[in-house]
Length: 299
Ligand code: MEV
Image 1 (cartoon, protein in one colour):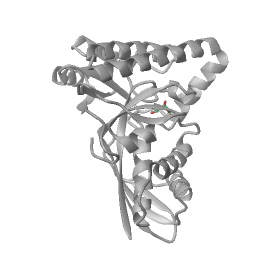
Image 2 (cartoon, rainbow, N blue to C red; image 1 turned 180 degrees about the vertical axis):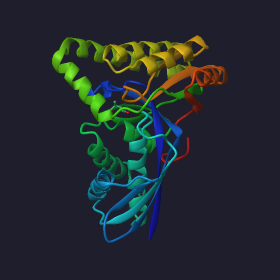
Image 3 (cartoon, rainbow, N blue to C red; image 1 turned 45 degrees about the vertical axis):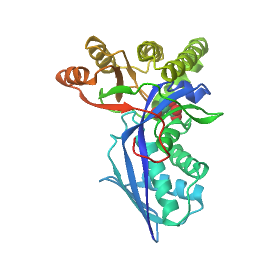
């Protein structure tokens, strides 16, 4: 029996990295994602577009192991750019978990999909908070903590974002480890940054629920300052944020692990900001975050 499944890409509106330390984060599904097709086979094999290899196979085995499922051949088509901070790995992990369950004719539950996607993610980065898998699973806009998991957020006014790719992708594992080393060298700095981010995320939740898009933009700018202070930004990310703000964005920040990858800009009208970023040499696209969606639905 052939099974198929989908996972969403995501943006982290606020709270990346702090979420690894138990703080809240706000994430939203984007329309780009991944679709997996699974068929039973003699051995585990996984292909993502033109890519295959031992790490992908190990991740497939980990996800299948978490579901108690035997060998399968799995093909994945990913529309989300990989390694850009847009949750490509988690989108594939969720798509694979869903496809494996569907190939058994088994109904999915959030627990089973998220446990399998978590096992998948651990192969690529040792200490995932689970926010990427949660957003890949849920779509819509979510408030997430490691302790409480997914809380769907009411989005009072649609959030218009320009997503811009600001430089070569960085490894999430390496960026998470760099924050860990910062905490060993400068525990005071890390503690202050984490508690600052926690306040920003809690206030951002209020802005999203009240439709205060300008307030949300300012909080995103402050979040970017704190992430830069944690050495997660790059000159390209700072340039993309500056271009976006100068052309009218309400707020701009890196999204995901940083060190390269994607920047998001919150806008009243995305067209001039997307155009300004493109004319500065960045690749960019626009997306809109509305109310929460049914699990697995296309955002
Ligand atoms: C990566 O998209 C988000 C990080 O916070 C890592 C994680 O939460 O697992 C950097």
